[in-house]
Image (cartoon, rainbow, N blue to C red):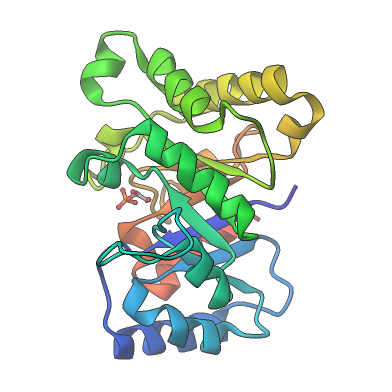
Length: 246
Ligand code: 13P
């Protein structure tokens, strides 16, 4: 299974900055890179990014998507519209969306189903807060997120990003041993629920991944990639992280 190293830009970059970034990244990445790469620009730059990445080995991803195909949902962008742009991956249930925008597990489940309906691969984000970890409830929380998002079944390709909330944007990553342990539990849960299908799911680690620490996570047997925020905003640094997975 090839690792997937993904650049979640969050609410960063103008159109011009997107063009400059992708041109530089395309110079760095060979035609057949040893890992799979995906870039998640803001909605305003998705179409242009899709044009620039066409025919390249770098996949296009979206940071969010609405499960309904179309309708009166002012300000939203649907999975159907994303698929129309050539988007391949869509992040579902990022902790920032859960916390800041009040997204529930039920809504996340709808997004995962809708992504499959329109031929996209969801990247389902799960992870506990620091209070939950300190209370020894990390797995309980992650298991609940998994079972509420995937309760209906596995109906398409899936990536799971284990992103402990306290490690996101803080500069303090999880201990690699803890990330490995959580990834093992996620894998066991997936295989327990979905049998052989569970083996094909890639599990990423996310939370303060940088070029200096990426190898610590990406060498772990149960981790097949990273979801990178801050350190993915520079193409050189993102490519250095990708190389650590090779
Ligand atoms: P940072 O890499 O900035 O900690 O963000 C992680 C993240 O939320 C990726 O989705």
